[in-house]
Image (tube, rainbow, N blue to C red; front, side, top):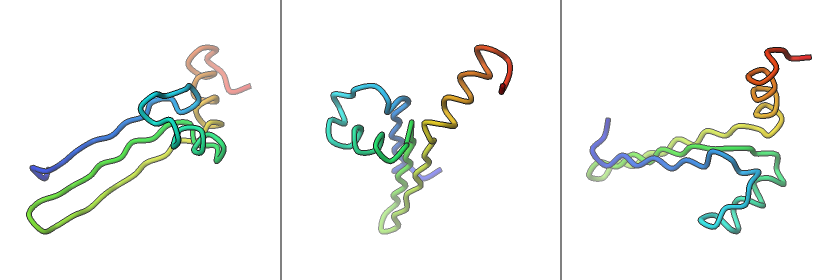
Length: 71
């Protein structure tokens, strides 16, 4: 990995977040439930990768973990 790597994680955008007071509510309106961002820098090279999880998918995963079923 690049020596300038930084990772940003918002595990639950459905809750209020003091760190992301503008971003979190707007993301929730778009149906985004969580996200991770990776920023890679090394000298003059720059790259980023952002991964998003929908609120609906998050709810399905929670139900499977808690109830053991998709129904």
